[in-house]
Length: 65
Image (cartoon, rainbow, N blue to C red; front, side, top):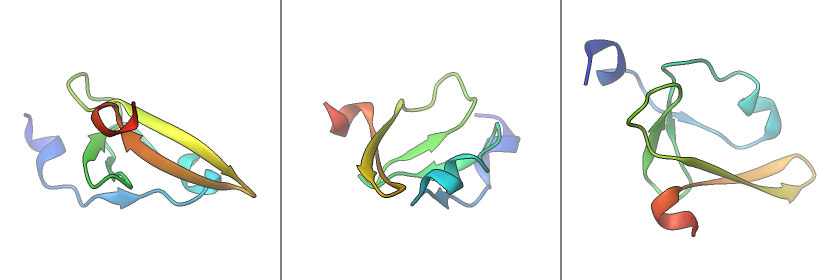
């Protein structure tokens, strides 16, 4: 893992508006408790469930299926 991904604080996604602010290299804490790094080839797969009214739930590929 390179240094640019190591020490970034995790972002928590709670709404669709939060999704639009994500950039490559952003470390995201998922609702299942795991982490995902946006734009990193070896990161967990991000699964997004729409709960309605702009609310979402995020999970990784291990917990989502």
